[in-house]
Length: 248
Length: 292
Image (cartoon, rainbow over all chains, first blue to last red; front, side, top):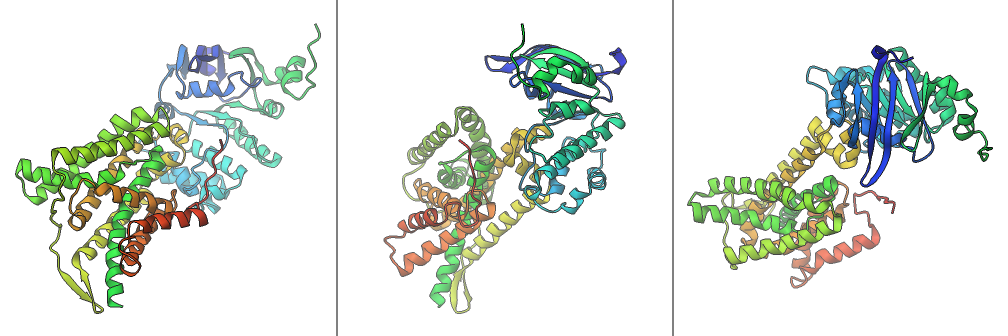
């Protein structure tokens, strides 16, 4: 499934961790262009660590990360934003005391001066009308789902080619989860690649093209999302199947 | 009534200076968790930069003021951050606090030993004249201080809320890791707040020293006043520090005249205790939660 020209992001034998603790232990995988790829795995498998390492927040001690054919190992977030990658981390990541408009505006802080930020903000508000309604309210007054929407809109301000999104559904109502997933599907239709970590593995895989199972910092499985959904082992471990002791 | 107005206005002027110092104090706290216990000495020092420039370099007052502002930016802004805050903050807030206490003692003793232990007369930026307003006699100094302090606060507000750079500084204070993800140069934003603080203390020094005279111990009262103003107003709000500073200046002055001059120094502390008991988040502040 992976011919070289369709691979947008590739990790090759990445080793990374915190202090003396190694979390990623030779992680290797590829992400195809214009797909949604979901990373699943038990707690501590290194799912969020993968994102931090790709986005230059954590140093890779070994291995290479390539984006669109260029080596981006251990570069800065600023450089990665310019390359067309954005990162939407887990949890609440807004600036609570700034207005919704100003939160959006900061998504374009790293933009070259040729980009008209005001136009981009306007476009984001056309796309997400709730952000226009609340444009001048403090971001802290938004609901959890609206805050996530704001984060995504802020991430999209620079028209990224690749979005790293960590646990987008956490703490959201089922309706908001659906809305968030719809946004991701729309982006894929426009040619954007999405790499996602998601607790809600089953629903995430249902909208995904590919799935990766990470275990102890290594890629255990790299399959199509459908294959993973139908794999009994995966089902048992991550998709809400009963956690039975493995029969010998 | 005339006496009251006089006391009120001069208290307001002192309070405006406290407010500037408190705002700087709070900016450092918000962007870098630096609780600067040397803030009072930071206000004491720039006046001595001026005196030193006049004495050693033989320049006039205004060039000396320019040199003092520059020296404040370099020493109280840049050097303070690079040499003390950056290395100490890695070890936590408390080691940094203790370092700033050490710095305050060092600055005080250095001025005493290398300049003078005597109070030095200090030239005011404008000539002192008495203005008669509503039957009260008000010093032109007080009006000048109020104007300059207001201009400084308005300018700062314009920078922080009215420009993209200022909002990026606020973003850095509110959530540094997300600011970094958006490509905001977090370290540079923090450095800017240290430079702003250096400007604020230099300004405060130039305005307070003609009133208090320049003395190595000035930092004791000023640092305490700024600290109390920040807490009384609310530690997480710039406008809180401004309100806190003004209230403190006015109450101090009125209490000294109408209650007891001897207990003047106790008034800020009493105010602090009352506020902490009755409204711990400060007059304008928000309660902040911290998970342990």
